[in-house]
Length: 197
Image (cartoon, rainbow, N blue to C red; front, side):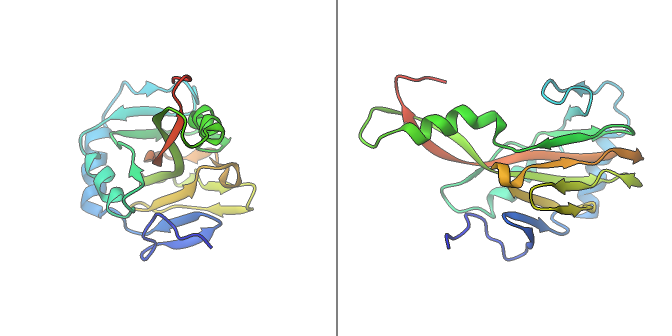
């Protein structure tokens, strides 16, 4: 069995490459984020999951990247965590895997032959979610290929593999709002130099 690039000492396993770290951020830190974003009126609506989420860039989440990085080995890196995602009643996040933005890099890295001239690129290996507020009803996290349903709590950090076996989504928000920060953990891979990204 391969060792994990994540220090899993404080995590609970929910499934294959699905982990939760309870109270990863404190109540004070949660309130600091929510006090900044709760009164925002103009939320940016993302392109990939149009009309299912809104995003607000914030300074109060910058420490999350460093805190996640402290859990990783020297060959894996936490992405920037500079935004909060808001979901409201009627929103859902359909099932997907977190490698979707990296599929071309994954393909080119698999084709690379040692000794060829190369470029270094980032490849997502895990997705991350930090939770600040959960709705009163709905909004649970689900993994259809592993038959897992999980209702997070404020302060949770969930980490899951980027591959299709960790395909996941968010159940429809029935009552209330959901605030979280998503990111990824990546490693550097080589791709052949003649194919630029």
